[in-house]
Image (cartoon, rainbow, N blue to C red; front, side, top):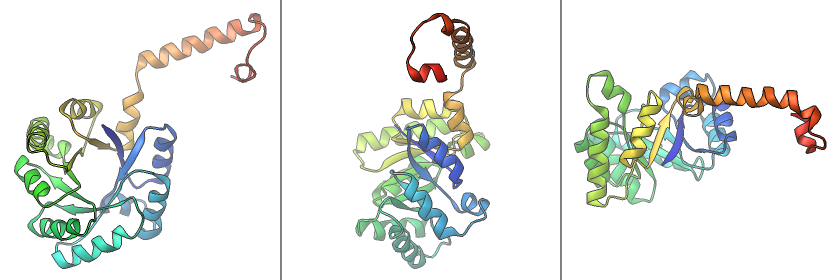
Length: 226
């Protein structure tokens, strides 16, 4: 399963990318507006930092205008992916753009029925939102499981991207169910690596090293600097 970051913040993207595990980015109008920067230079820079897919969301709900936006977004960079909402007009735009070979991420998907429509419309990615389903007392993991099972049975090419992830268990369960991608805020990304036993063990090793290294004779040059 590929790990994506759901953000438009360049510092977060660069730090996650430094770990060597970041495979893509998802953005939306809310995240982009939060950065307070000009839209086009910002998304171009994001695409230049990350080698994998970068989903850039359209605005409005007129099919012809969504198609025009899709054409423009696809020209931003080779890894720019057009993001459309799962509405009737969004599905129509998805069909037209995907028929032209433009990759589409259908977002704001909340049911298996919607996910079927997205796949039939030619979507490259479908994004079921887990956290927002949990917010309305719906079993988000059951919905994700249904989508993954249907896609496998029907042999759809569309990738399942688990979105709106609120904690590491969302990520783990998405991986267990066979989601192709998980996208999350940077704070959740950080939580994936954090564990008190790791931190305590590392500190113990470093404390022991400081006490012992003067008696260990010849060391690697980099160890002397640690």
